[in-house]
Image (cartoon, rainbow, N blue to C red; front, side, top):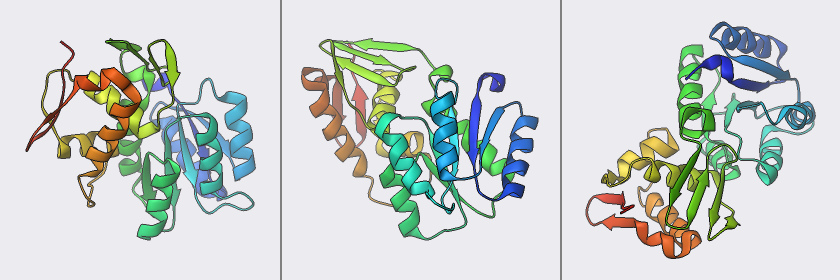
Length: 228
């Protein structure tokens, strides 16, 4: 993964934190854009959406907070988003994930830990880090546009559904346990019910129509993508 190919948007109303993050990330090879509030974050994103690969989004900003910005982003884009906030309450983390966040880190944080999370999310979500187009049956999964076609028609997917399908298709004929899937897609030590994987698989199968049979349930273990 060549970091010079990636551009990050850092949105934080604290100038010192924003500049510190910008300098740190630039020092590790990333291109960085900045925004000091929610409205500016959206303006910068819309003006540079074709080259922004990930957004670091502070929750507590004046005017439009991070949750509001994330909800608008998710109306038009599956851009990877890591929420950055001083809050560490479970409710706020759950709200962020429900709004479509890909990961969550609380202040104060270690810059090295944040960097590791950025790299992990980019490896999982960015089209620059994997094959551009995946085919199977009547499915066509395009990594760059984060879109799916089934029988020639576009099928809307959530970020987690897209990541899950890409993960399965990139690991054909391999039994993947629920814990493996949770670690790969949710990217944190999941403490909730691992059956959330089953729920997402069910929703994904429904959207894939006849192609849903490629996802096989391995009872007592997990799932296998059988592309033969």
